[in-house]
Image (cartoon, rainbow, N blue to C red; front, side, top):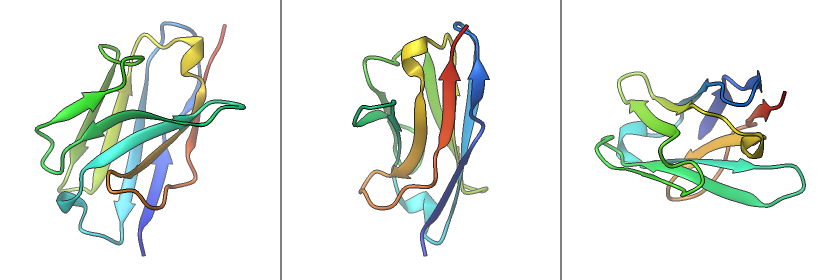
Length: 114
């Protein structure tokens, strides 16, 4: 079955950086585009970024463009999100998911606070 395990979250000061990872299994990872989405406290799910199956095409929400970078390693079935210049409004639980939709992992908490 599809399994997605996010990691790498934590508490960071404004302006800091974090790198999130997503370990995928149970499906042909290299055949799927992948998304990062997030959910802030008391808010709905927000799409953050997408990467094509081969990794050549990436897209970002306006709120993170220029600060976040999505990448993948198909040989390792891994998805990454490098987050720089973090802001308090980036505080959320971050999830990875297939671009076609479906299940998410348990998420990883990112808290940006001084």
